[in-house]
Image 1 (tube, rainbow, N blue to C red):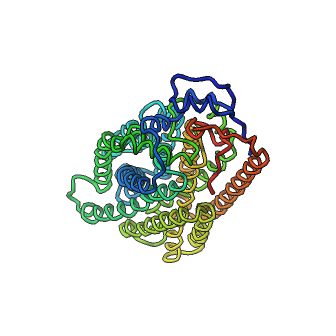
Image 2: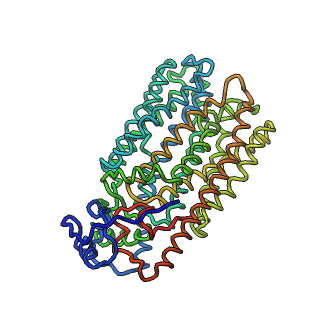
Image 3: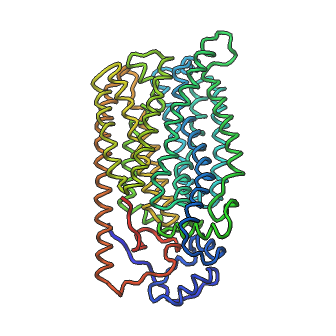
Amino acid sequence: MSSSAPSATGKEAVSTITTDLEKSAAESPGPQHEAHLDADGALQMLRAGGNIPPDPAKNKRLRRKVDLFIMPLICIVYFLQYLDKIAISYGSVMGLKKDTKLTGNQYNWVASIFFFGQLAFEFPTIRLLQMFPLAKYVSVNVVIWGTILACLAACKNFAGLMVCRAFLGVAEAAIVPAWVLFTSQWYSKEEQAFRVGIWFSMCGFAQMFGGYVAYGIAVHVGRDPSASLAGWQIIFLFLGLLTAVVGIIFYFVLPDSPLTARFLSAEEKALHAEHLRGNEQGIGSNVFKWDQFSEALRDVNTWLYAFWVFAANIPNSIATSFGNILVTGMGFSSTDSLLLVTPLGAYEVVVLIGVTWLASRTNQRLWLCIAAHIPSIVGAILMATTEKAAALVGYYLSGGIPIGWTTILALTSSNVAGSTKKVTVACIGTIAYTVGNIISPQTFQAKDAPRYLPAKISIVILYVLITIDLWIIRVLAVRENRRRDRRKEELGEAYVVEKNHEFLDLTDRQNLEFRYSL
């Protein structure tokens, strides 16, 4: 794992940068960076707020204020994003396949095409996330995907479902990269893992809420022969319109960054910038930098993160598009399956919030994540080797795997510095996620129904591989941190740290003060 020293440009004063930074450039004997010209927005907050002395009480109040304003908003949208994604699974046991005349493996392709759409739009998303105000860009996407989801209710055949699902994937492409950026803008490294765990746990809450809503609709509408709309159509209309309304509210309420947050005073913004100084990465820059893009492609961590996301999402259909079908294959009725999938969400919530909370207290997120994967491996073995109740328990235990996804997201947020590099790594991760999910429904071939044994065997193997991947990530991070510590000790007084280097939009490789979270 190599790292390169920042490039030097002498002591040039750049008029577009703050006075504080200019003084730093004149005073510091250490290297000055070309990145000054594209420095982080946190410097503006520091200048506007003046010199803020450390105040733990003010910091605590500010953290509470940010939590109360920011977390509910990003949690609500992530809740809807997952709920909208699994709506197709509810429809699969509420007459969707029969009403739209799906045959053979056509349902598998309806499930997969969503991720083709998401994959196709990931590269444009890298740039669009930086070109436009973050919250505004995301909110427009939320309104679009809510509208498309509602349109699914009008689909009459395979072609209609494929078109709507593909565009739904396009509209949702920005969500995961955007949420990684939001988390790194608003929270310190130590705070990020728990916050990622909270907003990602919305997947579990969505699994429970959606199951109960779908069950109610199936019982009270699905059994009514005179109903003008089928149960699956009501599901799509209800969730789609709700999502569109939330997207409109989101547009006017959520700030694009701490720099533009109206609920923070100038003093609080400066205090927030100081609070994030330890992240060694600021709050972001809207300038696209090709050297950071290139570094992201050459960094081994990028691909270790991507492998976990890719491999872990190949079995993802057991929770999304094939969850209800898999439970019915265990010997339960279609209607009962709508309720029986909900404990999976409950277990996921407990693991996500519990493990990320422990990680925030112990700073050992990777070891805890590895430990949480072990019950899921046992669960996968139970699904492959047993039936009925035992298989159902195994299905629930698989709900612990998403803790690895939250860990990877937190690592992308805290262990990747440089605004362009961070967006690039997040988007590569989302591409890996989409490719894994494209493959996922295809592992559940119609000829293998109702047990789908080949798919279940592959799940066991993949769960073992992603657990090993987490261990490798930790080993390399520990090695690099120790290498940087040794270099600092060897240089002694010759090692000079440039003032405000944290806010020069340097990458984790360029900034030798950066240390990787474990």
